[in-house]
Image (cartoon, rainbow, N blue to C red; front, side):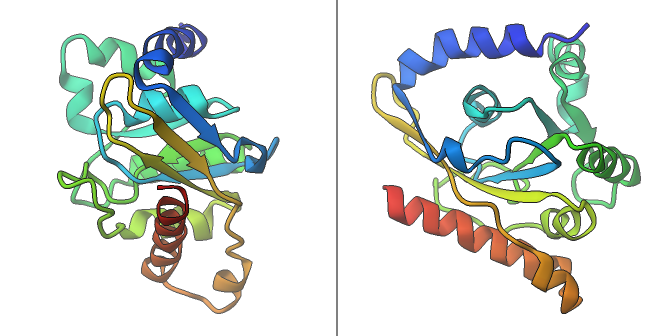
Amino acid sequence: MNLYPFGKALCSLIFSPLYRIQVIGKENFPKEGGVLLCSNHISNVDPPVVGLTSPRTVHFMAKEELFHVPVLKNILPNVNAFPVKRGMSDREAFRTALKLLRNGEVVGLFPEGTRSKSGELGKGLAGAGFFALKGNAHVMPCAIIGPYKPFKKLKVVYGKPLDVTSYREQKASAEEVTAAIMDEIRKLIEQNK
């Protein structure tokens, strides 16, 4: 049973007024085709906030541990999340993400791999660059600009898609492409503080 539309409506009812969410750059979001949506990660609430502001349904890659939490293990698969084992090469998660991208879906991930305790943008992991190179999809940088404080404005900024064609032609490494994605996210944060 797909709970995504219900979840999106519920999150919008709760989070939009609570955090006075302002969405910038929604018009940059590709209307069709696969999209790799890459965002900074400052809170556990980031996935629902990105999900409710995205104009398209997002399939989030989520750490495997969450799929063992009693309530979440039943909810996550029904809101299009799929597990990834952190700290190792998870072939199943990679296959799932690539299949979704090649089928024209939106895959959401947080390249840092974990929440930033300081709120500062951390180093991205190679996985984002791998999917950008292999997924044949638009690469969409997104910045969440906090803080998550009740009734303080929270911004979600969608940049212009990053063209990775030249990186593919130069046979760039996944790390190089991840660094380029993180640079785009950093620029969005700096320009919209």
